Image (tube, rainbow, N blue to C red; front, side, top):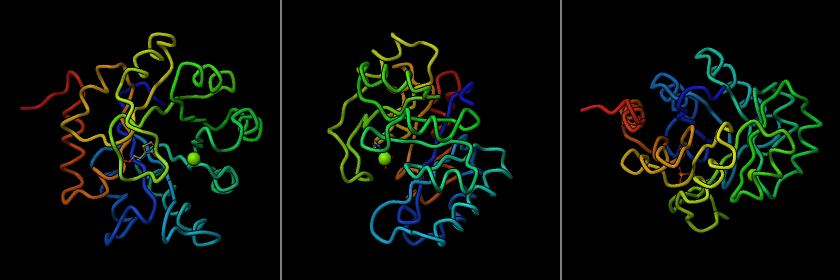
Length: 215
Ligand code: TZP
Ligand code: MG
């Protein structure tokens, strides 16, 4: 699931602003994102059956592009829509309890900030680790201060085969440090969701992948 460099797009309806969220997701899929996570949070966030319907529509679109569909935090929703994976943070459900609930047919992503948290997440059978915020971010209200890439480097040194996805304030022009630290992918909300040219922006992210630089 993370064999190739990942451009992992996260979005909920509030991130789409004035754009149609499903049209935005489709542009991102068309542009070449490799993973998608529904992260429905903040003012105006959908809930209940509206959220389930939206999640099902996102999953269907992702399936059409053969892109794995993840749900943030909400294990019930992930199970209801039969997501390909769930992503949880340190403040969410205990990762061991989540793994027990979802079994091994679903991928499990866990946000970690240190080798110690990585040890814990991997002992729960985490499929990949999210690490950040690398840079300052406007997209997460309770984000920790920007951490740079030093912890990514440490976790990578300890666990060279575990996929690490960097997140937080990542733009095409600052993605290089994240790849160089050993990340298997970059996770992005605003730089894709708010782009005037979503497909062009994804091309720029693709160009940041070492060995795939353009121009
Ligand atoms: N976790 C750490 S930073 C972040 C999350 C969910 C938000 C990333 O959004 P953006 O807009 O790409 O900085
Ligand atoms: Mg969370």
